[in-house]
Image (cartoon, rainbow, N blue to C red; front, side, top):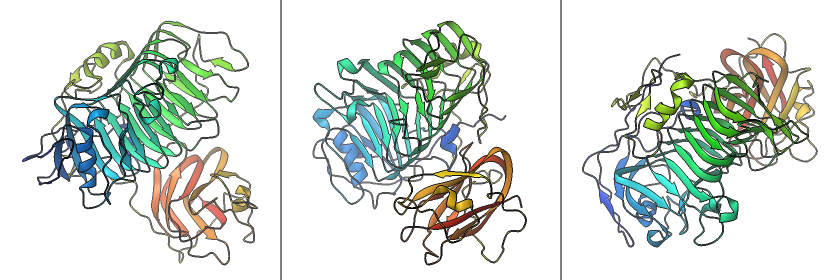
Length: 521
């Protein structure tokens, strides 16, 4: 496995004149912020670059951050917002505009894309003020501290989450941050890093999470299983009661993290979730891995971890700890390259790199922290193909061979009344599946790995042309095999998988999928 290269984002020169009623936004004469290159699942689905290539501005208040968002040409215009000083309720107000949707009680990133928020200078502290990401994509948050965000008491912000994501969020990279509270739910705090309601392709790296009852969750309930493809690496979890993280129905990869003083439980894989747990260091903690507080089991793959003074509870109806001798209960493949530090040096490496104001230092797998590489990621590597390049369906090239979907299983997102997931693999064009709306996903699955290189999406009579934009996803790894628009035949490089998903991200009405055919070639 090759080393993921740490890259420095260079923002384009530009001017941005904004009136700051309750703060200051300074036009920057040159790009000054290093933002590094995304790692883990944030590199998938087209990658995560934030505001690279856009203008760079400086903000010293929450109002100024909102003004920077609202002053763009549109909601997807790239921007890097360099933050210095303390951002709090006293200097944060709601700002209105066509390119933003902000609020007074939080930093609101709603229905926006292509944004970097990075701490500079003497540091950036979001004090009792959370960061909320909703219906947004391609977001980078780096080198900031978010502390003491409350859901009860005074003042309240963001439901008590330091950083929270919900509702169709894609591609978020949070790096070199410090997320902390001063107690648990009884003191008014909630999660430090929460993801729910269809949040995918997220990486949390080189960050410190501490002094909280809840580290974070992926999925708000046992039925909220549309989240996942999340990577956690080189983070410090310290003095956390539980949820480090809690994972429901998704896939997560945890490697080279230092878990210290997990008081009640740690990685809680449940409700069908899968956790890949590689070369972490668990210290002075209890029940660091397993399924806890539910009878809906999850699974895990373990390799190279160190358990130092870890205690384990007895198994029970709602309690299935992985220890005292943790063994893998599943296998998990990831679609990206990564390099592991040996677990024995994780405490020292994480101590030198994790958290805000650590110089953005990273690891190269040699147990020695490194400074970021100043390479400009806006100069793409022509040898690194983009997995999301559209592969438009060609209805004139019908597939040949056996339709592998017949006899396979099927599931998906919420379905319209009177339809069934199984209708897409029954060979009958007279039956169909419809999502409960204009977007949704349908999957075909097998009990063992099956090679697929082509699919044929056949719409029901009378609904031809309804499907708009789509993605084809290897459910097991999160890799995007193809994307484009319109139903029909879609080809891609042969891949061995157990579940393939056709995700409809845009449509001109309610789609009706009569058949989801799969072929080996």
